[in-house]
Length: 284
Image (tube, rainbow, N blue to C red; front, top):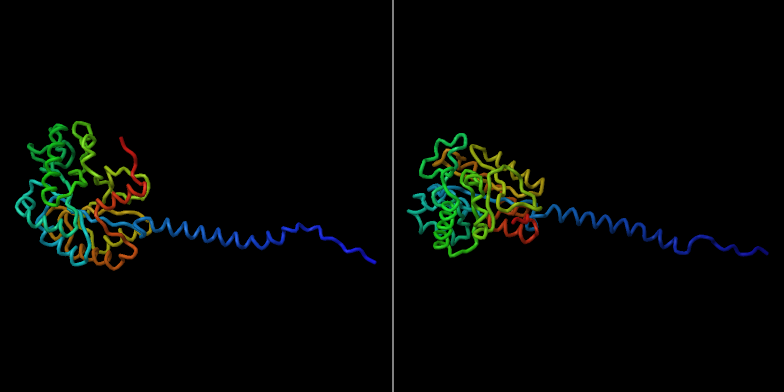
């Protein structure tokens, strides 16, 4: 009579074999979830697009705002408070704010550093190279007061005229950062939703691009899960830095058609989102 042979196999081995596929499946799901989260970094969308318009031009009221409104998109208008298209059309700018566009600070007189190359357009009265820090700070605060009189808001963003951030080597915004949620610079970079200096956020200055070229820039932001900030001046004229009305409209049409994947928002809302998600770099 043969004795019954006892198996030397680990009794838990069969269970282990069964759980292996489950573990692999779980890890696969986890990696797919992580990818989907990383690919939807901007308000649950692939990328963010911010449309900014500088210098308070007539064409912004006459052409840009109607175009944005036709697609139900919002823009950020960096306003120079002493510019005639602002000071002489205040009721219209008030309506722009009431329609949820952002009125933002681009100083009182738009001073630039005339000591830099290619700055022959800078006048002696508004040459940042001969300003004091106190003067530019006072002018910036005065512009905030003018904007608040129109929209009643305390939260504001800022854009450096000509991208100049300093007076005599001193950052003039450092002393008044409490006046602003964020500031836009002019370095052409795609912005990642990771630690970022919100007081010098990069942007792409637009001058002469076609609609297809503008759209390709947005597609790059989508591929890299980035935020792209467009810096417009003239749209259909009125400024040496200009883009055609047709190119601008093609961009807006693309943004609207792809709004399920693209978050088109104001600079203020984008900055607040980055702060809320921990992407704001800590500054002194």
